[in-house]
Image (cartoon, rainbow, N blue to C red; front, side, top):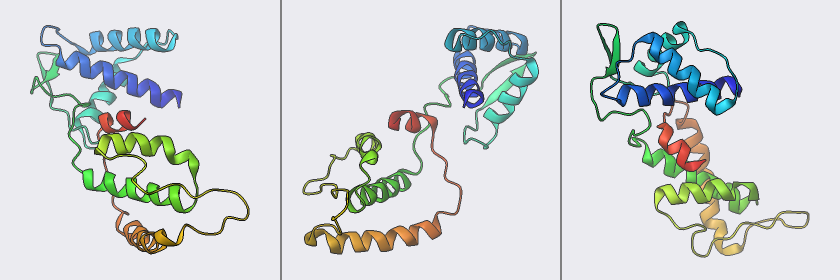
Length: 186
């Protein structure tokens, strides 16, 4: 995880630098700024190389993580061509997919009694503008001796189970969520 966290801190730092209209950000200055930010955030003095910054810019420009950042370089100075762009302000293009994931997790929370899903479900409900738990819905008690959900929910849960397995087949394609959504959920 430390490598991924370092990359995320570098992306956030680069995003801030590219939004700053008054800074003249060369590769060397970007590497120095990222080194300083990582040292401040992680307490480690590991300098970031120019090569790492070049790779980070390549990733931010591409669709690998769904950023597609409009980074341009003019006379060795890097910046966003759109001054209002930020990799962390992207709109959720797949709100329907997020809602489907929420419904699936809600199914497992209620039917299977997976109580550790409560916190992420609360955060997802907040992002989707839902109330949690939904009215009349409680998690299934866990432990021995508990066999099924209450009778009034069985029809709903059977439909959800069928829908879940159909969705699982359809969801073999890649789904991209903006980082801001992930941060809201976490």
